[in-house]
Amino acid sequence: MKTNCEHAIRAFLNQLFVRNRKNIWNSYDTIVAVNYLIQSKFRHIDLLKIIEQRCPNLYKYYFCFCKNSFQNVWNNKFCEKIIDISVNDMKSFFLYFMYLVEKHKNNSLAMFAYFKNFFDRMIANIAFSERYEANLKKPNYKKFYKEKELIKFCGRIMRSSEIIEEAHKLRNANPLSHSSAELLDKDSTSKDIGISICNLSKLLEDLCKNK
Image (spheres, one colour):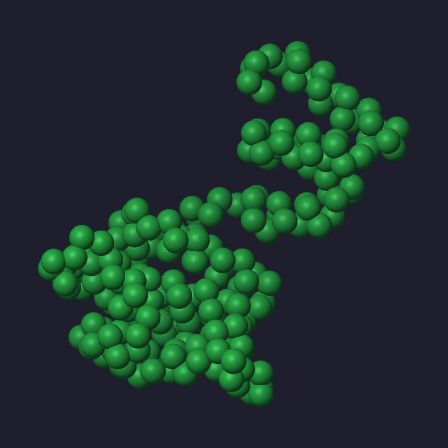
């Protein structure tokens, strides 16, 4: 790939196709193919078909997490504002990405755990961008996981205290966050989590609109 020599690249790919036809494909061929696909931005359809046949789980990972750009998620004014606020905070993007991963897997408990942490971190970023504590040189992430501090900061938004209180109840009952694991005893857990994430998202959006 680094040589940019089309003849060398075609010869290299031909060897992979020959090995596939002869049914002598092995794990090393998979590694080589995946490296080529990554560097070529997954544009080789025929090679992807081989991966789908030889390594179905690996192809599923590509389909879920590599086929579409993660940037496509951030496609509106609100998301642009979130990016501007969190420009140097890779952990926020990581938390949101993991939320999307668990959402795709319909894993409500993990999905909520990641999103609640993302929400708390974003509140700290917003507070810092507004100079909520004027003497700080970086966001105070340790402050804004506390229910009382979140309610105080978000108080300008209607129903914010109710939304935050409900989110904290869910977090404290989530077996991934608290040993009480009370959510395991409820029949409406997935529905309650979906509503809470929707409300927290709207709360973030309203806070960004006021900036």
